[in-house]
Length: 210
Image 1 (cartoon, rainbow, N blue to C red):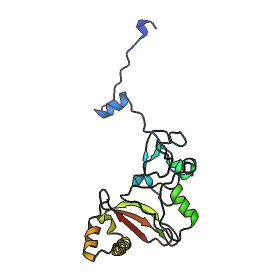
Image 2: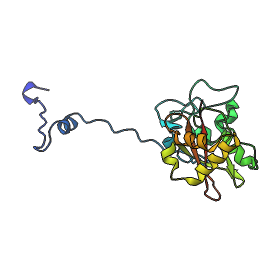
Image 3: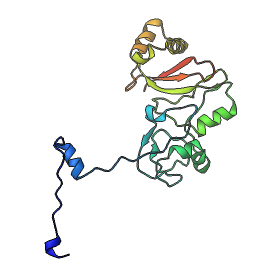
Image 4: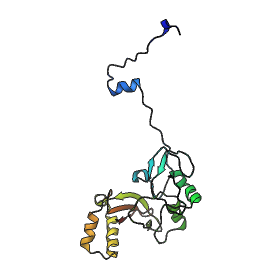
């Protein structure tokens, strides 16, 4: 192009635009990645809120695709993959079938086999201090709502009563039991774990520590 036809581009921002706004006009930033909807998990409905699934840009160790989400919870079995798994391969049972892994265990009780399989093989797990089985209530697995501390449990007296009965089963007196319940910390230990019955809506809780 002849030199006389060349011109320098000059961006003149509106008078109201200053600082960061001007930078956005001159050098717009890319929009954040839009991530797909997660598959439904009836027994763990919000794994992002509980920290078991997080946004990530990495391939799944099972399907090999970058799905936008990655599972961060425990994986059990003899052939645990080196990489992390996407929630879709968990929900569809692909990871359990391919690697022979499971993500949860269930407590002994009148839980239907299909519910137990779904919890073990197709439901994201979550970090705990000890190994224990997913609780059952009204003949079905309970719904995991997240880790809780003493403050959060105060609004669920039914869950607190269940924990008191559990402590009594350990042989604890009332004083140590209340001290233990008052020390529960959702971000530390001892930690509480809140569940809700899928049938009657009763809240359940577990607690553990190292």
